[in-house]
Structure formats: C-alpha cells, structure tokens
Amino acid sequence: MQATIAKAAEFRGVGLHTGAPVRMDICPAPAGHGIIFERTDLEPGGNRIAALWSNVMPSQLCTLIDNGNGATVSTIEHVMAALAGTGIQNAVIRIDGPEVPILDGSSAPFVAGILNMGIRSQNVPLRAIRVKRMVEYRDGEAFARLSPADHLEIDFHIDFSDAAIGRQEKVLDMANGAFVRELMDSRTFCRQSDVDSMRANGLALGGTYMNAVVIDGDKVLSPGGLRHKDEAVRHKMLDAMGDLALAGAPLLARYTGNRAGHAMTNKLLRALFADPDAWEWVTCATDLECRLPGAGVAAYGPVNAPALTAVA
Image (cartoon, rainbow, N blue to C red):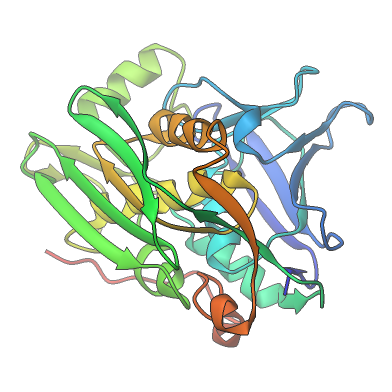
C-alpha cells in the first residue's frame, strides 16, 4: 500500500553549498500525490516542484530540480533517499530556501525525523516500475546500468587515488530496511583540495568537518574519523538511492554504478523512460511489497539520529 508520514517532521540547518539557514518540513500528503517540494519563500502558484527525473537540471555536485517557472531546490538526494528508504511515496516538503539542509551530511537525521513522526499506510495499492531489459549510460570508464530484478539491488564501485578511500565496492539487496541498517548514516565526502576549489567558486559555503568527511591523501580530517571503513562507497549508494527515487515509484531493478554520480544516474533514468519497451508498471501485491526498501521500517521507530562510533 502507498504510505505518507503520519505527522509533519521539522528540520533546521544550513545549505551545504549556499551556507544559508533553512527550515524544511516533511508533511503528510494524500495517496497518489507523490513527492512535491514547495518553496514557502516564493509566491504560491509557481512555487511547487515535483521530485521527478524530468525536472532535474544540470548542477554541480548535487541534484537540483526546477519547475520551469523560476523555482528550484537543490541537494535533494539525501532526503529523497530517506523517503525511499522508509517507504514513503507521498509527501509535501515545505522549504523556505533553495537548498535542503545538509544536517550531518547523511540521511540519518531525515530517517530519524520520519520514524519519530510515524509512517501511515494509505490503503491504496502501490505501483512499482519493473525494468524489463538492460539500460545503460556510459561516459568513458564510468557507467550506470539498470538490469531486470524482482527487487531493488544496488552494486557500486569507486576508485580514488587518495589512500583514505582507494578502491571500494559494495553490493546490497535493498529489501526490508537495508537502507536504514546499512546506508543511511554514511556522509558525503570530498578532498581538502576540492573544498578549497569549491569555496573559491562560491560553493560548499555551508560545509564543515562535521557535515562531510574531508580527506587529504591518507588522512581523514573530520573529527572522529569514519563511521564505516567503506563509508565512501556507502554514501555513493545512498546518493544513488535518492536519485533513483526520482523515477516517481519504487524500482524493481539492479542498479550498477561504476564511478557514477548524480548526473549519470539521471541520464540513466532518462534513457530508461525513453524506451517504452524497457519498463512496465506493476501493482504491488503483498509478496512484492515485502521486498521493497521501506517494508517493515516503521517498526524501527521512534529513533534518534545515531551517535555513531568511528572506525579505524
């Protein structure tokens, strides 16, 4: 069945790139509504943006959606991943600025807020998108691919010259709460040299060592170190989860990403929906619902954003 948040959850913080303070509320919405962002600092009538792949616009280092009438919201990937990972398909996200708050750089605070407010089943059948044949987007050695599967799987590979990251790979069956257990607490990461470059170009103005994992060669500069030895690839999987949620419904597919990022995943979705023979709608019976990422997650709440132990 479709689901929404039971009561509004409030989040306050700053935008990662703008550095501006922002308030964001995830609010209940009726069945069939989907996920829609509403810019409360703009005039009604042109301030709503559907969280869909077709509304994604090119943007540096994050996912940005645009309604074509001048309203945009950026850095939506972490909250979209939290919604998908908790099985919420319908919500109004009211936000008083152009960028989602970065909070701790992961999805964990959003998941905690959602579970603390509760998840409400809406007693309306849920539809999913089944991938029927392989679709791929490539750019040199980097690629993103969707292949047929009866539930969502994510397979991700990264390769960085920095010894603190290096080569990492991870494969997860995303069924039944795997996002909450395995991925939600993994933070965005970058090199110290990238931070200096981004700030010189007016980006990462809200970034700190507390809301991102900053590395320099073989050193992790952020206090407390890593939450997982493979936190970097886990965060890339988290990002992919959020970007895939812009399909507008749960995906039944295996996603494989090799050095992939936000733009590549969006181009992959565009390639998928450009081929009507590559996908189909399916209504989720009980056995299929049990294999979706948010199945059973409501039983975990109420929770706090985790106080996590660093690893070597």
